[in-house]
Image (cartoon, rainbow, N blue to C red):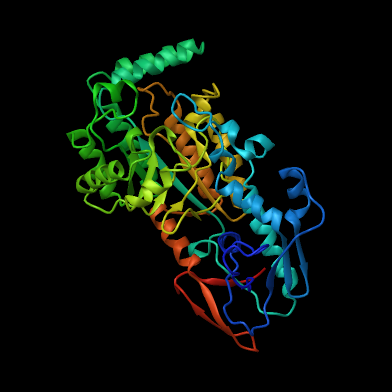
Length: 463
């Protein structure tokens, strides 16, 4: 619990931005107190006389966070820095685009600082929580529990269904990719698997095997499905490659429904700046899936930070999970958690993707992909945060990725060994919404308090 500075008049000089304060305190699991008379820790925003020239220097200086008797002070410049990282301020100002019309990773502030492998904004929030504990003394201090079921961190496994039909063509493209990179032994091995799969349905079989692996471990995941109308042009671009109403697609979607997995839209290129296109594809998927489609992730991670969130909001999505790097793994927005992007849209950034290493870094050993995933998972666990990973169901032997299915099993076992809460993105966003709504309306002299908000988002004593 913490008392925030009173909202100032709009445009008042030196007034802290309430959005920034609420974002950081909620990330720190500190619950705002609305009782103006309660003796609780208060948060003050200060203009420190010293200034740090780099992000690394701010982090080394503890983010300008100081604790006193009953008060935590946060440097205004550090708060603004965290907000700029979260909202991709540097990327909004970038004009460069790559061949997929994406803002390149080099434009990201954390990449420029060499800190994209660290959830630095989540680390700042953890530092704020620790400072509040030191400042509390004998004052009551409850914080929100990080995740359900008493778990200290969380994992969300997600899958992008990019391929369903015409699998031999994609297997051939993969062989060309391996040959171009000089991986001739791996290409020969993959070719042998592809020949043996002729006459079968390796995409459906691979999806069924992946679901069986998750079912054996009581894991449910989130699947993003393409739902536009493919044309020769979209097919050649690798964008829309299958019909969502086709029998094979319907069988896959049916198996996801049977396993109670979450289903979201994999938005095609035409949706990036268009609420109307988003709405059309979302409605189409909802009819096929027969369930709510709350989330979205853009195909090829095409995302215009200035316009795509607004288009998603206009189409009625509850959350997006596009923010992340296509060509490396790490924390593009600096957080290992769910954050609110606007009035109604949550962002659930992903930290790791299989093809970031295979496609862009020429790392073709699936076990090395898993090693990388687990390093980032430890960083998420350290801040009691959320690790979101992307595993493509077409990463099978027959489609040019020998050894990948076994590597995925290792990933699951290693993640589960650290006892995270594992849920679909729908469930995780629901949980975080309940946490975000918590407020303490009144605190008695003996420390008892009245809580508003969702009773299913429990509190715990600050440790």
